[in-house]
Image 1 (cartoon, rainbow, N blue to C red):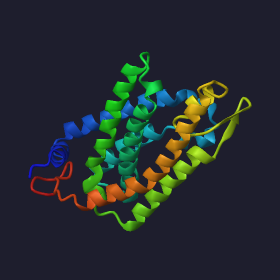
Image 2 (tube, rainbow, N blue to C red):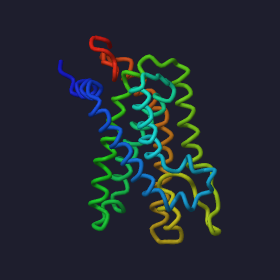
Image 3 (cartoon, one colour):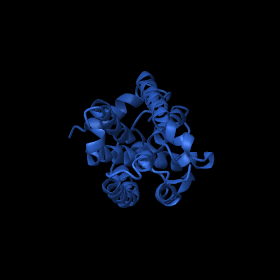
Amino acid sequence: MFNPFKWVVGLVYGDKRLLALIMLINVVGSAFGLYYYWEQLMMTPWYYWLFVPDCPLYTFFMIFALLFIAMGKRYDTFNVITAVGLAMYGAWTMFVLIYFREVYFAPQNALMSAALWISHCGMALECIFLLPYVKKASIVSWVVAAAWFLLQTFMDYFVPFTYYGQTMRLHPLALMEFYTQGMSSFGFLAAKIDTMMYITFAMTFIFPALIYAVSRKWALAIKEPGAAPGKT
């Protein structure tokens, strides 16, 4: 049966120009993500910066994951973390945009939010480019990846700091939480943010298991970028 995902993966790895295009898209996405999180980064102590820009972090990792693959290098744990991060935080953002639609799809934000929803759908799907490479990763790589995502989620929600006398956290909705404190809508939004905390913790278990299961069923022989004809 024709599988469009495997066809796309084979097509991209078979053409260096397409591989370079995917890398370029991730460069642009990472740069925009840094811009998007800039205000939050400037409000956050520098030693927590790694835990602030969740989505841009994994698109940034993807640039190097593809670069290493193009160079014939194999870093299983890095590839696993990147694949899970792309899928998990891409899906997370798609859900958040809908769940907080009263904010993100208000008339003044709707166009940007629609573009973000589409781009994060692409982000989640691009984990397929790493599936052939994480298929052979050892269980140690998967355990390390799962531990990393648990740590990241713990840091996001349970390591607060103070900014100008107000408590602030590291999660991606921290600016919304910070600026609505004291407003009539705060209780409603705070309850939804707490719900997202539980959903995020659930995703840290679901997505490593999901990517592991999908990768084990990924039967695709691909030509390594730069390999001689006939080698896979």
